[in-house]
Amino acid sequence: MDTNFNDITAGMLKIISDYDETTGFKGAYNIREDSSCAGRQSSKNITINSKTDKPGIDIIVKPNTKGETVYIPACVTHSDVDDLVYNDFYIGKNADVIIVAGCGVHNEGEEDARHNGIHRFFLDEGASVVYKEKHIGTGNGKGLKKIDPVTECFLKKNSRLEMDTIQLGGVDRSTRTTSAELAEGAKIIVRERIMTDNEEDAVTKFSVKLNGEDSGADLVSRSVARGNSHQAFYSVVEGNARCTGHSACDAIIAENGRVDAQPALNASNVDAELIHEAAIGKIAGEQLLKLCSLGLTREQAEEKIIEGFLRY
Image (cartoon, rainbow, N blue to C red):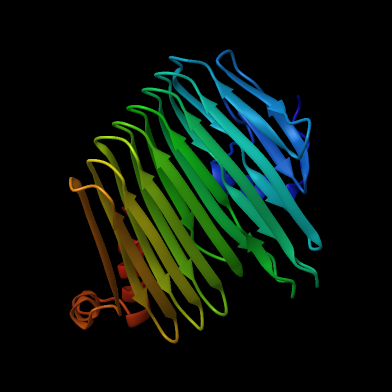
């Protein structure tokens, strides 16, 4: 299918999914614009089909597929759009792929604009996925820009899922909900980065069930709350077998920002090893002093510190 999207979508695609206007996407992709498909292509090993019972797609990766990337960005380009989509990923045995699933919401109007993507991952034995997700909001309309992703993950024996999620500007309201159930030897690694400003509000909810022997989870959220913005971080890690689990929230507050962090651990097995951490504070004065002594203004020094903090 040929691509057919507007200039606003083209601009957001460059940010959220590294889209190249000259070469386009290489391999399998599905581009969603304002609740419709604006381009799709399957590859030899990755098939993308429309759902027949609700809006969304099925992405099917053949067993033993290696080194391929599939792109599924979604964009909302005007106000008074409430986009809801259901995407299911079926990753075959021993496959090793990258999935890029960014989202952008642009609003110049009075009404709200929202994207809600419900993604389910089904990883077969030995499968490995790197999942990248960038969220942005653009436009100067009075209507809110909202992004509310829901991600459900089901990992079979010895499978591995790495999630790298970023929200670094312009989204007025967001609730990011992620749940996972892990079988024997399965691993999930999550790296989340969020920056809010003005009156923005962002909520993160993690829920992981370590059901299989030697399964493991490592969840880390780094965030910066500026202006009058608010962030909340909730995580629950359940150890139901011999397993390892780690959950951490590291936040910086600037100006009138507010952050709530509530990590929780539940263990029902004597060999479950679970750890949680939470740290909230301001930028250290000695860091600012050091950078200012090198010729930076206070504002420039703060930006450099925040930039480094949000880079893994």
